[in-house]
Length: 391
Image (tube, one colour):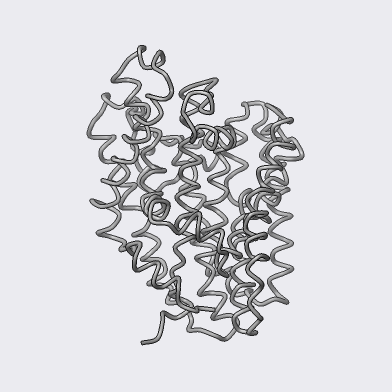
């Protein structure tokens, strides 16, 4: 029996990476609710591992963007290189809609129905309700702010979904490289314009404005570039790189973003989102090494498989979208229900309680809403497909 076609190849480690990205965002917002947190001092053993990325957990969204660019571009790249069928656009858009909207609509309905019991609830006027139904957030001269802050990234992702079929028309090396260069330049210039336009309103406004397309386009394009390179390697029958090269590329692709954040973003402080040079080129500085890491995962990094394709991390990846949607709301609710005494509890107690509550809600959302609409494969099936020689 032959293995799955490369277009349908399901790489478990890439799903695991999505779980890590969602976990980073959770850690970042846990720190938001617990200023001055030191998990390395409060939580035995694992606290040291968790404390390191806690201040830079917002970069988990950058991982999501690169992964989306890579995974969605794979079938388009394969077709552009003459090695696969043209992706069916109707099926493509249907899958995108079913992937994003059911879990989001379920959460929106719960927030609206529960009313003032939720901290994040605010009355919505007619235009605001329409904006929420369409995910039309933070766009235009009178932007609508989402009820849940993390929803800001949803229209950014969906904007790329709509744009990708057009970008795929240029998915050949001689056309793609100029398009990539133009996209990177547009990203930098747009982020500069956002800083100039909204700088007087504060860094929150600049962050949201600069992160919209084309401000984050660089990360999607770099992820898609890695997909094009991966498919070109398959078509040209490139020799499989030595295992140590793939492991080094994977590790370096994750370490370099951390160095960038530590050495360039952290020293910038509050000035970062007000037009600092590191903010302008941030998607490129993060997108390039992350794309290398994703490419090496797809090509079979043993280290990546060990860390990200195990059943625990893989299952975290399965619920990552619901985890991303719900983690902020759940933590708000815990603090509201418990009251001021919550802040006096030690982190070795509050952190696992928050993590378990978030995972329970995310898992429920996944099984009750996400999975019925968008079937994702269990870990054992993903492992079997990942073990097939797809490229």
